Length: 166
Image (cartoon, rainbow, N blue to C red; front, side):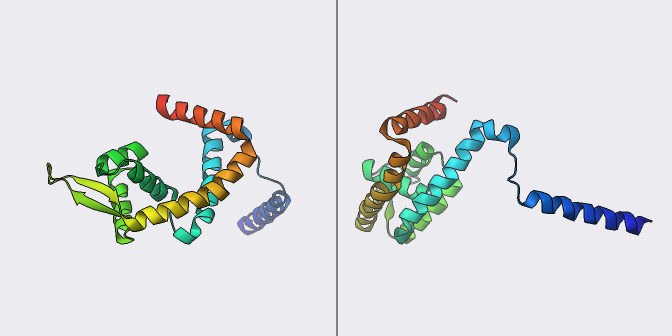
């Protein structure tokens, strides 16, 4: 008797699976949750960014670090990591990668030997210039086309507000 129940349950499960395989998964309340929508959008945006800068092999976080170092040469690791919201161990590993690729360098502080200042190398400046062109011409252009300039500006303002006040 147990065998037939198991067999019947397995058949019913296969039948139910076959019927639902063609139907889209219903998200229910999840479709109304802002966090879910933000995460899905972030994943798609990161995928597109990675495609755009694939020849340079940069992640969004690495690109962000290079941008900050370009604008803020000589700032220390903690300041850059905190600005980007990157945990110290993750940031150190990322810096190791960027330094191995000769895109940035750590320079020991003259006033505090425990601290390092970060600077872009010539190769880092060249890579960043190429990345900025690719991102502007492809990635940001697609987002601008999708959203339109005013919606894009409004979205950036709203997301900035959430990031700063939440």
